[in-house]
Image 1: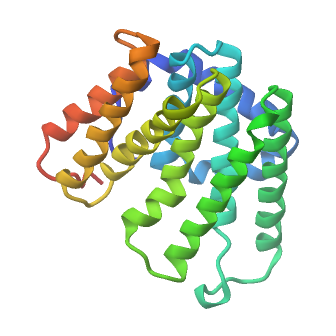
Image 2 (image 1 turned 135 degrees about the vertical axis):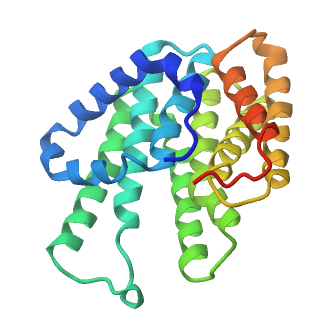
Length: 252
């Protein structure tokens, strides 16, 4: 699972509530998908994405209820995408059996469930942003499987786009527009990539580029938010501090 961040410990109660909502929404299929969930227990993004989604929603002044709902939506999205990602092509030895059919079926069901949750949360205006994100994720998967693209480039499409969209949706719902909204999206991308790349075999200098950009994005946004000692600021500072105290980023 890689690095464990201390800022997530302060969100223990909130993340327990997210897990409760997550299970309730998938209850009809819970026994069938539980094995997929267990496979993600040690998945780095699975563990780091929910707290980051929650803290940016709260940082931007959105209430606890919508913050938990949207965190659950992104968690559901990541699970659905992970299940679909297990489906390989012929060259990768994919067997066309009941397991394949079920993976496709349950993945499709969860994507549909995610859209329904957006409507229930009163956030259906965000559907277009989710569509763009899914296109980016699919592009990243093609880059990985067909084009043998560099891992960092693939990661930016497949994982970075999720963090970016999480922050962008929070910005939208908080009323951000223009340059502020773009900085919010870029903050999600840069902070998410910093966290993801720290769990990879990559030079510290390459990761520092992302965290420095994240700090710049945060300063622009915080000129308007005027928050002091927020959980979001703590997350950025912790990532930077960890980077400054290690010589090599590979920690797995």
